[in-house]
Length: 330
Image 1 (tube, one colour):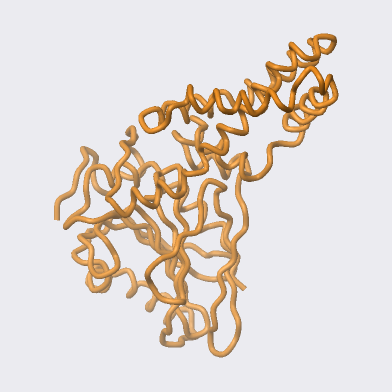
Image 2: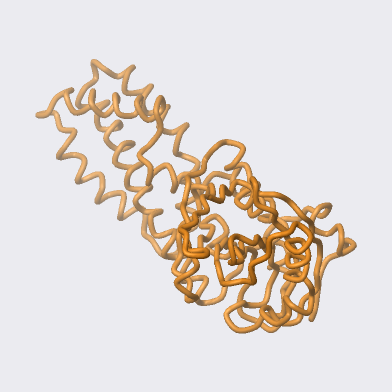
């Protein structure tokens, strides 16, 4: 196993700060492409409004001040995201030709024959966006191109840009549930694992950082001492190696999630079976004869963790922790 970094292993995750390089294998690239395919919807949304306001200056000059204000508001809200989209897709998209097609379409809507009516409605919509936000799909895509969240993805929690998602399972014949808060830039994936799991991935991280919840049968224990003993056993290097290949534990600790005692562990692994090589941040809880596991981190194809995986993990482990501690287990 090969590890990277200049910081002491025990402190590498807490003290090192680095810039992140984008990376992905073929499967990850395909996943990222699917998650980011909505970019052009945002581009078209912006250009339809921008071109419409531009045309309105000609077709409704009496409302020039209102239209100018709306245009300025639109630029302030979305121009940065649209510039990012142009930069990312310029090699695969002829934006001049596409914009020309959008202009032709909008000329039919904002024409002199139509007068000021569609222009006033357009300016009103822009004001509503400034006051109340964009439609959910447009808002999410805009977040993917916001430098603030690209550089510090955990700030989605600080700014309350999250949504609730639900995981359910059966423990000792009873229905149990675990709700977690997921950043808006994360989307549900379809893991090739068991029916007892679900998985979400970060679109900001090109579909690489992931957070999954799984459950499996476990020995039922009751006393506090035996619960702690069982949890500590789960995060021993020898036990983890049976699932994740050769591992090196970086850090671990105990924390209660509500009324449920949990244990967490950060480790690097060479990969085994469905668990690829990379960096993991896992949590384990015992719930009525089952073990509930939060499996998260940054991984990919290869025989050992890579420098790029380490850098991306450093950037995202705060977010992975925020997701975990937001959990409510019932």
